[in-house]
Image (spheres, rainbow, N blue to C red):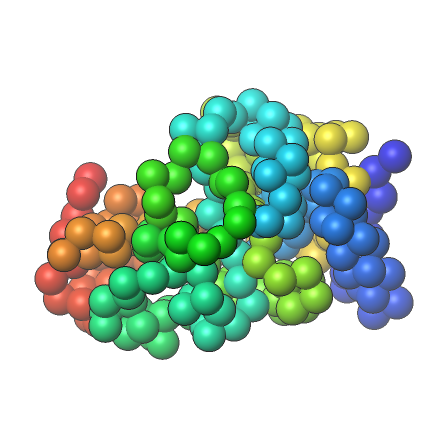
Length: 215
């Protein structure tokens, strides 16, 4: 049976974080708040958990989930061949609503789907999320919704869509932004904005002027 924890209550927050940690270790799914929308997450290094995540959303391997981290320094542990502007963007916009597509370290033992050697990485600006990530390590996290439906901006919306497929719901009130992160592909020589979201092209160009709009 799913459990929902009120993370605005300090005691429930601690209980919820421990329950979510245990759930991810057992390969189960959790819903967590972020600074953009609510996310559906699992251990990034648990292929069975990732399969459950994709199945819960009604999504195939062709749409692999991003990975959330709790510290900028983890970027170098997950990605390789990073251009200088990757760190400049991370310094400016992390924690925050920027997802960066990078080449992943070939030594990593994970299966996020059909990634073609890449991984999308983000450090969210949300304390409950960061507290959980500090305990669990990197989580594979997609927006908490059924594919084709709007991303959940509250834990209740997520639970209505995902129900018992999720073990633990961490409820920290409405997501402050309510729009997804912006996604920048850093694998080409010139960065490309592949999804406009909470950050505008102009904001990204304030750090990397050459950023292209792929839309």
